[in-house]
Image (cartoon, rainbow, N blue to C red; front, top):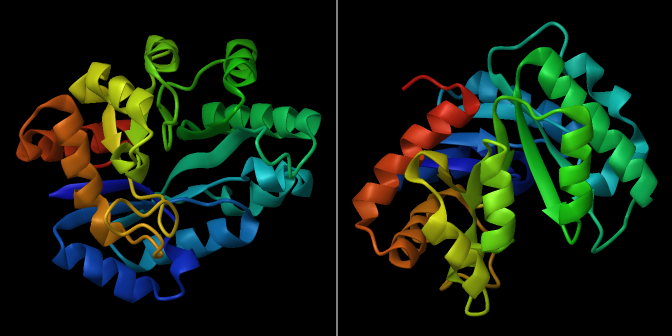
Length: 250
């Protein structure tokens, strides 16, 4: 079955429907990712009610100004359904939060992942050098995922050199994403993840519509084409890699 390693199911407004639709489409597990305290709480609640769903708790760089302490109530006491910190990182494209604040809050969430022994889920956009600088300074959690990977071979090799996983979204279906597909080709299968980032980044041929976890297979098929591999090979590899990246049962 497929695993959607990164989606935002509570944003859909129809949580149960989105999960049921995904199951019917052959998606056996979903990681619902938090972007602020409210969305993180919603993801945790959903994970607590659906055995196919796990959650992460995080503060997106857009919301970094809200303060990482807003996440503390969701991490104590520990919840077995919470498997990661993030998405967190740096976004220099929109700069919705000051860059200095983004770096401080990203560093704080790296420490949360290390302290709680949870997977770190990274968002980086137009900020590769600073992202790697924060990781070099603070330390890299044993399980670290670069979500919605948008770099090319150079960035992929740097991330893989840290022992990270690369998660590929519907961007691999976009005509102008040649460098992303090059990165996907060089990624070892044990470090390869597939995601929808729903409700964002719907893959071709669904562009312009709200994305959904049920379409992760469409992304996986494009990933397989980029790697010149059978779809089933990518399906099996990404299922196993998702389990390893987030400490999920096989």
